[in-house]
Image 1 (cartoon, rainbow, N blue to C red):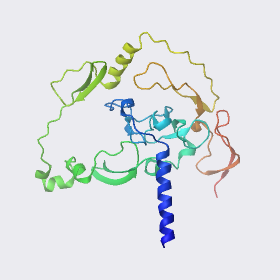
Image 2 (cartoon, one colour):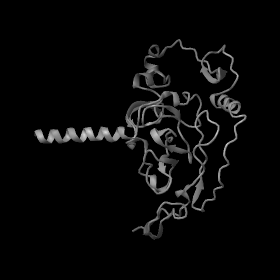
Image 3 (cartoon, helix red, strand yellow):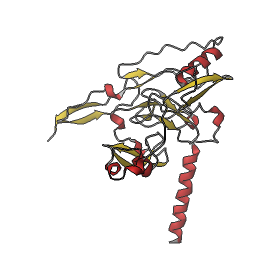
Image 4 (spheres, one colour):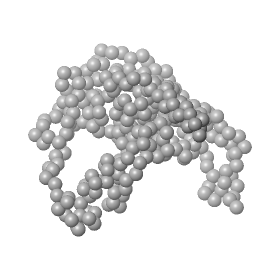
Amino acid sequence: MGSGLFFCLILTCAAHELLAFNCTECDKSKCPPRPISCPGRTATDPCGCCNHCAKQMWEPCGGENWELGYCDLRYRCAAVNGTGNVEIPDIGICKYGEVSFNYWMDDDENCPPVHGCVVRMSFCECTTIRTCVDYFSYSDEPTCRKSRPYDWEYFENPSAFETDIQYCFNAGCNLVEGRCECGSGNCEAKYMFRDQKECNAVLVSLKCANVTCPELPEVKCSNDSVITPTYTPFGECCPTVPRFCTCDFDKCPKCLYAERKITYRNATGFPGDCCDLFYCVPKQ
């Protein structure tokens, strides 16, 4: 009994050491401003340091302390070459494909358990999942239910849902002392820029007006791969991650629904050798 407990304690300590291995002390000064508008969802890196716009398809991710960011839902931070997930501190790429069907937000061991609620069919569904992406709309069921005036309970007890909150959709950013200050909800406020992205673009253009970036080499990819975009850290002038080729597994041939796949050669997952060689036979 005692030896078993000691063994479990050793495993627990080892697990914590492995979890902390990829992360160093957080430096908030290197984080971008808290995102106001994003093409997808917002995310917190697995090190728990910075909030950022979750990365989209083919964008770089990972890096030391996940400084390049984390992928949005439906995507995974995959290794640039190969078929597995990225291993920090390597740089990965956000993508999905045939090799990623077993990956999903509630099985993301990089991230902590998060409890919250979403609304489906006008009802609140609450659960706990492991995720770094801002998946939930509400933190708990009472908050979620109070926000749904068309739930059946509203008609049974409408006074429980009364609120004096007045909503204002005015939002934007101003350039103040060399940085973007963004806000929302103040109907009387005047903003120079519509959103954080527009303000940041002007800020960077002013900073980089006399900066010449090194010319990036031309990249040509095979038919089974794609060229990724460059990555420029927030507020910087020149890219720190160049373009490169990575496999697009959606370009690989697939069997029909009524067929099953029999592989006779596994691909390496490197551009030019992204797709397995196989033949399809009817399902029995």
